[in-house]
Image (tube, rainbow, N blue to C red; front, side):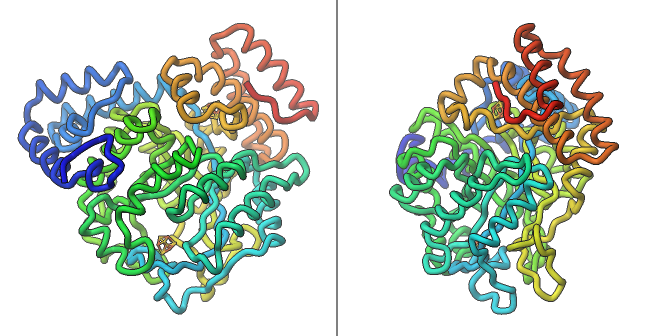
Length: 473
Ligand code: SF4
Ligand code: SF4
């Protein structure tokens, strides 16, 4: 197998020999301070780095260089994403699963976990609970089970979610995290109006991948790895990739992740919309201590910084797997989307589960409510954003990326973030959060560079106060 970024075969675009060679070269060049600094300097133009270059940064342990990497990551983050942090919540539909993933409590051999699948009526209740918290953007999650969770069930659930408007609430973007499927099914998901299709690779190392997925359709490395190509063929142009850090040697997976991004860009003209950086954590019958490759907080922060430098325009997501402290650190370095108030069990927003009935996919570390998370972000000077405008304006895939790369997107993001935050403050916030949010909105409105946009945004903020909703640029 030879490395070919444009190949449609998993083992050619994620090529083991190329990854090993990249790591070997990175090891050789990691102490070349001049070279490392020249890469960091070059990356400041927000044009990214190749997987070979980024691997050298990740390998380098010179304190001065690490400091420069963090500084550049923060600069890029500030330039492209400003102070905005997009908010979302996961919604677990079903934990029936036919796969045997060794790191997930939904694996089919787990006989004592409570198996649940939401009915459409139960989905409605969950969505109302999420709307009452203030969420506008969801990521739906489901195990793989053609009998219990066929594609028709997923499509019907998406329809139900979009149909609910409780009080001023609405779910305006449904992202979907389901198992690798066929082009035909991806086409159906596209027609159902999904936002991003998310699928984590877990690990790019084929040998380890097969050991971690001993049974079930997910065992097929090529079918899983080539899923994003099929999704794009099916018309989905926003895809989200990620690995579960701690499953395989993180450096290998880091290189694989960037090679995947390069492949999507080379073949489809647009890279991944988002990259998720989950770390392995405990759950029902999963003990984190069983995974010897688990990574430290320092390495995690470095990974986030180098990803930010290497793929500046790709949003980066962390979940409530991470603690408040760890989230705080990586927000600065590059993370642009976080979940808040999450429940990782099926039906957990309406009925928090008793201990003996655990159906959660992972133990939530950050257990704060959405209001507490919003309040905390405001305190740190961030703008919690509930914006979903791009997807609804048809700014997806390459249209989205070209707007990003021209810098024009910033003219939309800032006012949209402030308007959606204003909606949140009016409809859902606690008194203290409202007070902090109003002060931040007034300050941030003045920072909108375009005078006309600033004026319109101010008028719309006033209209939101008077009861109107759903404005967007
Ligand atoms: S990771 Fe996904 S496919 Fe694997 S057992 Fe869990 S829900 Fe099933
Ligand atoms: S305007 Fe587009 S890119 Fe900016 S926050 Fe909204 S959806 Fe995201």
